[in-house]
Image (cartoon, rainbow, N blue to C red):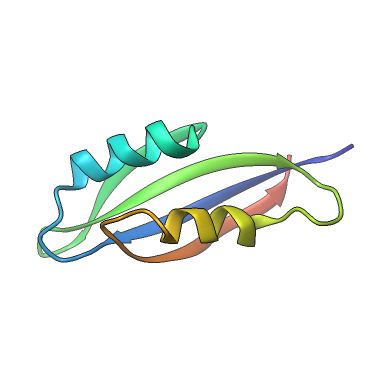
Amino acid sequence: MAKVGVVYKVYPEQDVDVDKLQDTIKSELNPISISAEVIAFGIKVIKVFFTYDDREGEGSSDIEAKLNKIKGVAQTEVSEESLI
């Protein structure tokens, strides 16, 4: 069975501590990797990498929904997705 790798861009809500949000994402979802990146004028986005098995009924939307439920997350979008 193939594996899928997906990178999400997680946009924090205004005035949220990005480091604390990263720690929350790590503890709740256990991603493969996570990092913060400045996109403009000191605004940061968190890039989060996950893998999952490519089977029917599973997909990146399930992980995205879990990310969006975390307090402090304003928006999540898939940045990259590919078979690995």
